[in-house]
Image (cartoon, rainbow over all chains, first blue to last red; front, side):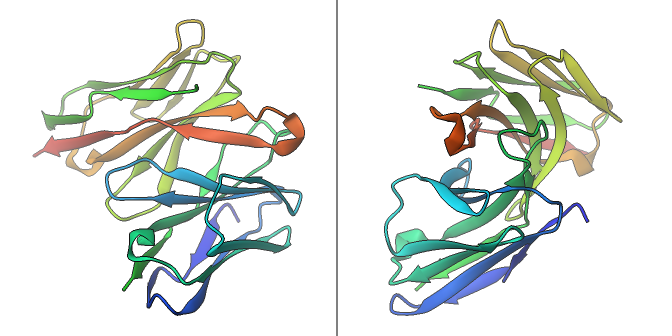
Length: 114
Length: 117
């Protein structure tokens, strides 16, 4: 299995809703990432998990809450989002700092906040 | 500051042309460099990965080169086809300030390619 699977593919949520994005990989990668991408812009790093521990938080607002239940799963919990949070959310994985490989990205979740 | 720039920002070519996409980066202390393709509204598909010790990588009609000393990489696409139309992103992998914190991928601004039939 050489894929990163993200669910759902599309999500529409109100500003008072609570929802979660899910990401799964079975490549044995020990680093997992969340990126946010706005239209016609490159992806921007949000969070890095290394060996199931949060190692980097790029000053992301607390309405985004990441979680790594195990080495294969990564969640992003959403609460009280704003319309400007509408974007494509991408999950990625890699072998981490001690590996030599590249990043593998999922197909993304298109999030619309209404 | 670690910046990655891609030129041109957009490119439109007739089918069959050979073309070159450029990527430049300001910090030569890279781990590796990866080229991605992104179709509208979709995720990123990895095309080629070049380690910092390598000069080039090839896959089919694609060839990527790396010159770490000058901070440049190029993606060469031979005999372009309409199906090659997409946004191409180069991404440089740097180590975080503390290795224990992990690494980060810094993306270029992208080149939007349109190949006309």
